[in-house]
Amino acid sequence: MRPASTFGTVRLIVARKHRPWIVTRHDSIEKLEDNLWVVGGDVPGAPFKRRMSIIKRADGTLLFFNAIPVADAELAEVTSWGKPAALVVPHDSHMIDARAFADRLALKIYGPSECE
Image (tube, rainbow, N blue to C red; front, side, top):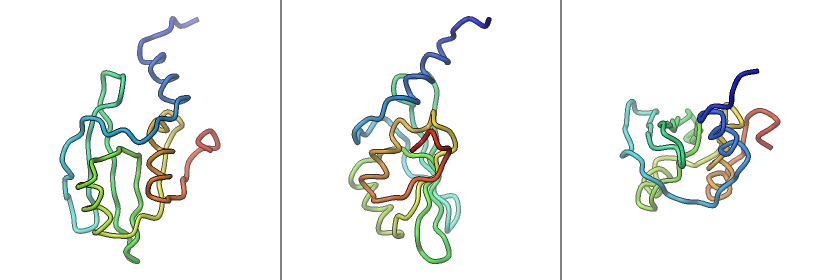
């Protein structure tokens, strides 16, 4: 049997606990393309980083891949760029801020059944 690791312990905490909207340390919005912005930041309570991608679709709606709560000014910039529509969560361990993020922006969440 494999011994428990710090990563495994953190992952369990991240996967099972939904937090309210809490802005933690993150980078500025990086505008990679006309239709692709990203934000990098720290994972709360863990020694590694995370990244949120924001894709502007042809119809002007925004698709978020992962969720990082940002400050009000940055959130206003994002919502003025397009209409938030969907959040993709690739794995249940990425849910720590997803529920609050989806609630705040009225997003539909897409991901594994564990994310429901």
